Image (cartoon, rainbow, N blue to C red; front, side, top):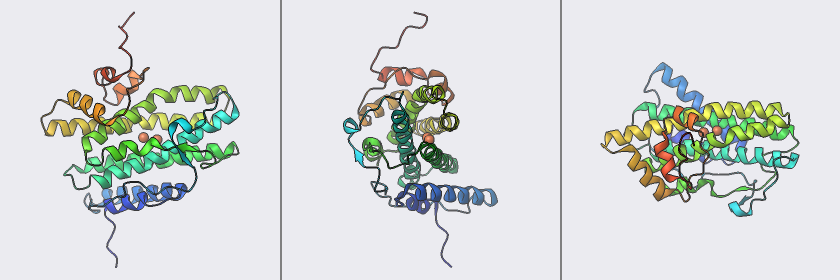
Length: 279
Ligand SMILES: [Fe+2]
Ligand SMILES: [Fe+2]
């Protein structure tokens, strides 16, 4: 009988699966197996350790371009809406890998089981989000891979391969928090175009992304507390070290607050001065 996979091995399997649909399906299967086992016996699946690839396997298409070379399309056109959904599908597929990567990459760090539960759940949801975006693309006569996509998305993972706090600061607390800022505007675009399927899919994504940002801030605070560090100071220093840009307002202050990120975390890193309340 072959030994059951450890969680880190499951993560590695997802990371080394190239096809998008196959990666998302395997991710969902492993997440279901993890939660089913956890229900029976909290320690039924070992965390284990893994040696994840620096870059996850990816499908042959889409072609990956530098951000400045990705053609910009007007969101008011059909082609623009397809490009927007394609860009979100690409973000979701990257997010599947990002959440499994944090599990595999930092499996050797002593952490409560809840840390792994949270990222398995987030990875499962990203896999669902990728499927929702693929379905929307198909109903508009397109598919994931039909357009070029952004190459830079894995940079944050690569820059923080040895720094769990840096990873939490930059991936969930900066990049995924940015998703909370921009998703309402996207929902508006699809609502105006009367594309109900896309509106509903983006509303699912918007609701579930709050918890991914919250997992990030929760474990960031946990690690700061364990080492007696000031979370705000450490956050500013890590984002300045690993994030290659300033943060762009307007911020979704309400959803960021829901996710445990107060304004004095992000405003000092913004490319604008915080407006004075009431002015
Ligand atoms: Fe997502
Ligand atoms: Fe997410």
